[in-house]
Length: 232
Image (tube, rainbow, N blue to C red):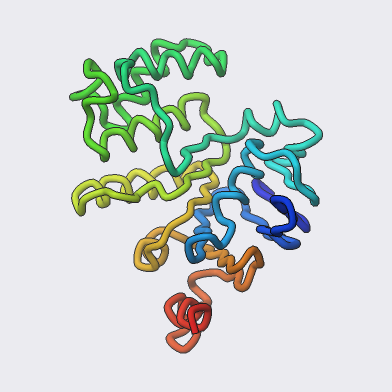
């Protein structure tokens, strides 16, 4: 499995935010991680990517335990956090070179050029990140997540705040990337999930309440009906 979580639990003091979370994402799948605000999505993603280490249970990425072999696991992961923490004073090309150096990417100049073309950053690569639109900043975030050619992409709300044109462009890019990589992304848009994903994992109050293939959903048991039950 590209991503495998087994009995993950996480608490902050006396508040348990994840309770016995278990799910898998197969190689080459695009899976959505869904849930209301505060359901535990971002906490779970931070565990998968190694940002949080104080938890119970096991998480493995491409067969590597994120707790026991974090370096090997992180080499397999590209991560775009929800708040997309970039350096606004850096130029786009400068920033991608910086990230590539951290990953010790070979043929770095060529790889940076490849990312600029793939994520369509050519027209802004000479600008500082702080001057870019939200859509272009998301593209820079995706480029940094891809520059070391990871097998798994973890994208936390990658389309948040984008206009319709930017949404179309990001969706096209995610579909293209899904042909060669395993992708887990969180979203609040059920239409986005239906259009992009094979699998949907739904979390509510720190518990997995559904884990299903999109193709197996019916009109009576749709994503919309599942969410309606959660809010009743």
